[in-house]
Length: 67
Image 1 (tube, one colour):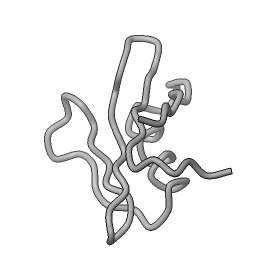
Image 2 (image 1 turned 180 degrees about the vertical axis):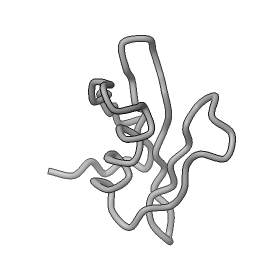
Image 3 (image 1 turned 180 degrees about the horizontal axis):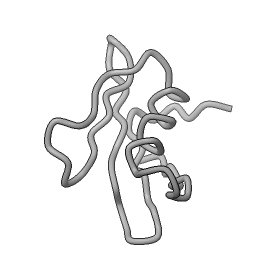
């Protein structure tokens, strides 16, 4: 089931690490504290994978909370 919301916040053990916002051209990723890292992805799944990958090779997958 896909959320009808337009914003998801990625939360890891240390707190919020980024967000995903639905837009007309895809899903925009913003990574908190990482200037220039982010982008636009064609699906919510690929945006979530991008956030997880940006956290590093041994990072746990963050929880994505719809807002």
